[in-house]
Amino acid sequence: MIILMNSSKTMDFQQKSTISKHTTPELIKDAEMLVQELRKLSAPDFTKLMKVSDKLAKLNFARYADWQRDLNGSNAKPALLAFKGDIYSGLDVENYQRGDFEFAQQHVRILSGLYGLLRPLDLIQPYRLEMATNLATPRGKNMYQFWGTKLHALVRALLKQEKSGAVVNLCSAEYFKAIKPGLSDITVVTPVFKEYKDGAYRFITLYAKKARGMMCNYIIRNRLTGVDELKSFDVAGYRFSKTISSDDQWVFTRGEST
Image 1: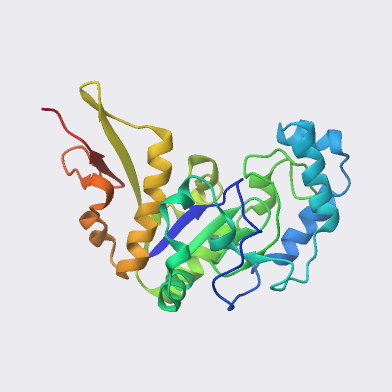
Image 2: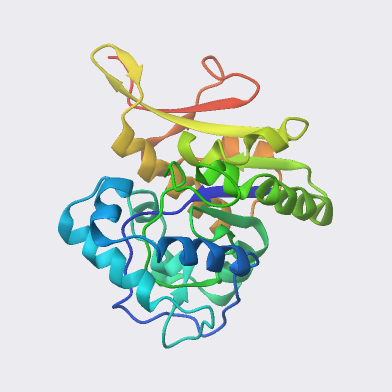
């Protein structure tokens, strides 16, 4: 079973890594190609391309100027420890033991605009490049065209090696779009998290993001390898709801009518 997550705009490179072991992103050459294209842009170009403030544009302009292909513990940090967005708030990586990291390294992959597909212990440097960014490169007009078939090829190879044949999609729609076409013949289960509010179960983005992280954490901590085991997820009040789930979307609800 392979778990797919997406990267986060929020990162932390101040706190020291809790694990010394690390790996190099498999698509680092592709990331370098993107950096070369990004270095052609001015700070105002970054503002327009990434739809950010001038301050953030200047920050990322400087980040790409400083970016290095040669990664080490002093200039980079493992992806699972670097990302700190809403999804990652549901993880408990600060308390992970070696076995947790090893399991995650085998079963978790993180989709990234810059790095393509990351293993949890792959070193990364600070960056901002969302998958939906319309950055023109020699490969096309946006990130989806740039990555093409590379991402799902890696996942398919991993599934063949791992032999489970199932993918758990904990990504946002923006990121999963980059890999979905190549997984049409693969079993893909997408957990959906809903809250009981105003007489009905509703999707609330903030809660759903954190719950996706909690689901990933649950899989890692309990060493789950079979997709049906996800139905036992019972963290923070969530329960699997068979009645409103479908074959490929498994709904977990929290709260109920009185």
